[in-house]
Image 1: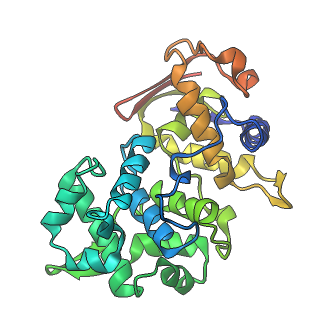
Image 2: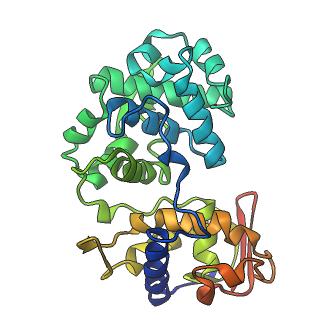
Length: 302
């Protein structure tokens, strides 16, 4: 492994991407899949919190636009609306939950997704009076502590300890949940978000590698470079200011996601040639060379 983190390059890309995303967009897009609420949901309401929380808890190995669309359809259907009510999740047989999550393709892995969904919902019902804000408040709204509690809190099930928050506790989904609570739900009490790592998925990884902020020679599991990517964005945003505060790593999550999904996915995996180069907001930082990500394996020659 021979990997370099270029924080000066990262600083320029962060500023450029953020400014583009909040004005004209990245490749013309400023919307995220989770931005659209179900028809009857008021932004910031408890219904909205559960819509965001439960949906993001199964946001792994999924196409985000189709996942959130499936979730909205499930919420809008009176017959499946109960899936977003923690008490009704507690009262409903597991088999029915699994079946109803498949009606609009909300679940891709029926058993696993239903277990994640029900466990998270029931945890908030039994431990936090059916309101995730009670959990956040018990953590003093302290974001790093929230992430730690998501990882560590457990309960006894059939004689063994199991996580209170399966998958919501993960290194990608936990930070992603906090960002969505801030940006989508509008929860302003969250503190120390600057200490929350960027939620790295394949898109954040691809965009970071394609812009040369993390570069070098490497072949191996994709998650082995995740720590370099988290570190790169922690350091790169330091000293940058937005909206009367300092920029944080979470602020470049959405712009990077757009850059990859609507841009860097068009790169030639071996040469780095991109058919969208001339219209890309950060084309001056597009790095030549191999950035190949397939089946959770990355080949990097940049």
